[in-house]
Image 1 (cartoon, one colour):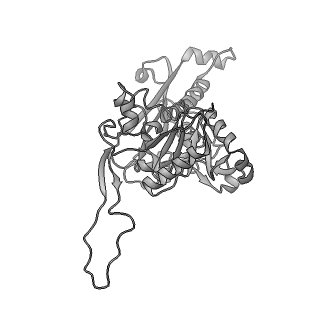
Image 2 (cartoon, helix red, strand yellow):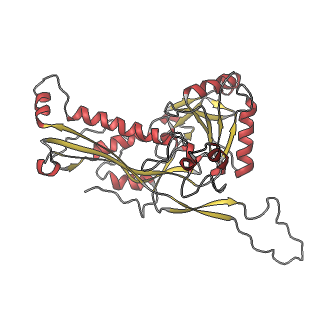
Image 3 (cartoon, one colour):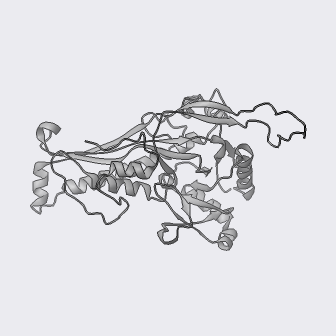
Length: 361
């Protein structure tokens, strides 16, 4: 029986404890590999995949993980009143009540699954020292694919295709009405959380194109100001592919040498600074903000995020199940599956932005 129930659990640590009962420290790299019997739930293999999924220095790794609670949520689209107002005279009555504007959004939790199998004859050959692969090698390969493909989903270009049954992408979150309308014929690909992007600005992020022929520091300053002005919050991480990161780092080469590198760790609680003995990443800083490289990002964009307002909601941490029961699997051998249930959730689109078309002339 799969052990998970995200509802009623308040922290990702509580969800991990429920999912991996019997493993008190799922982050231990030297956890023993336990062989599973027929038709069993393999806690260790699932926990290993979950650990590796969260300790990568990529988009998935820098985002906080939270237990999934409900499919509906609200997005604040305006302040309760004009900023800088609220003073009252000494003898004045109480002012009128104020309230922000909210839009309702829908979050559809997604199930990501990858199955694998190995025949009994193939396993016999492997155990007889023939030049063949056994179930252990097949399982390990599919586990790595299960991990890699989820980050690939998060990194997908919004204009290519809608998310469908896959995870939402960061590019779809960090988009706006103008971008959707400009991509004629593909407008629906930009829709997210029930918002028709081409028809509303309610879920608009800050999107700007590189201003000149070559990328400039003014592009960075402009995006930082736009995010601050629109949301009242400041971004805390940059992320881009290696090509874009090279362009940006070259521009800030003197500052990188002066400021030094940022020391970070990643995990279920997302990106954290001052990692101390647990440091896992050493990255450049751009305008004092860490820059994460992720080769899965396909486009020439530089993304700026405030990770307080975007995370991955987890319905079920990665689980692994295997069975060698022929009548159950319909196979003469072993069949297994890796499963993760999750979805990307963003609650304040104005706290994110991107610069498109980052190139040097």
